[in-house]
Amino acid sequence: MGFKPPTNAQAIEVIVRHQPGLSQAEIAKALFGKDGYQQQVNQDVNWLERQGYIISEGENPKRYKANRPGPSASALSPRLPDNGGSRAALNSST
Image (cartoon, rainbow, N blue to C red; front, side, top):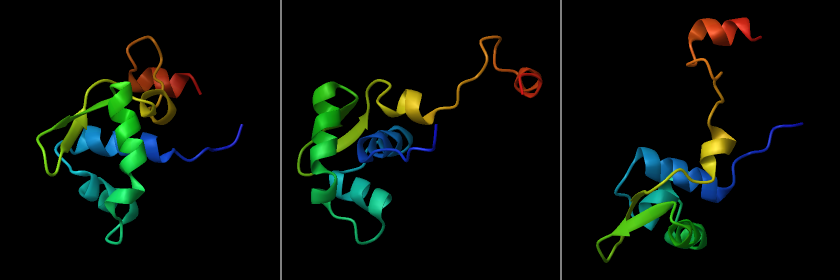
């Protein structure tokens, strides 16, 4: 099984989880660099909000923060052993 890059929605959820309070324009710049613009993330941000993964606060512009683990939680987070995830357990499992 090869590497699959994260989807825009997964990347947006990670950005919002680690930098709460960003607007869509700020999320676009975080994801696409200085040339990023709001329309590049609008559909994914709205989908994440409808699904309950992120929530918005305020108006003009709305600010977003994580609400519950989203599509990135299983796709982008490392899985640790069930024994507490100690470094020794990680080393011994390889």
